Image (cartoon, helix red, strand yellow):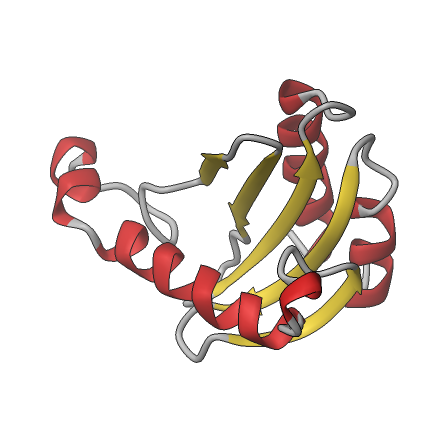
Length: 134
């Protein structure tokens, strides 16, 4: 099992990583953060970014469009990952699966010119799997 600081430190080793945070999507609070915030040049910080990304994650996680097609299944919900592409960056959200009712996700901001999206998704899955005990 990896702690929050270890999880974030490992996420920052993913090629192209600029910032990472562990976020509670029900409250919008950053439980931990590393690197830069995508909005650092605007005077905004990780907490502001966490609240904004949490709103997007909450909408997707609770959306009937994603749950209707999946049907009944065990676990926290049908959404595993979210990818938002921007002109110069990728924004990845990986929901943390737990045996209890979790509302936590790992958010990773990547520089698009340096990142490999497939590698980043694979690494995030591994990191979040080790974040909580099996």
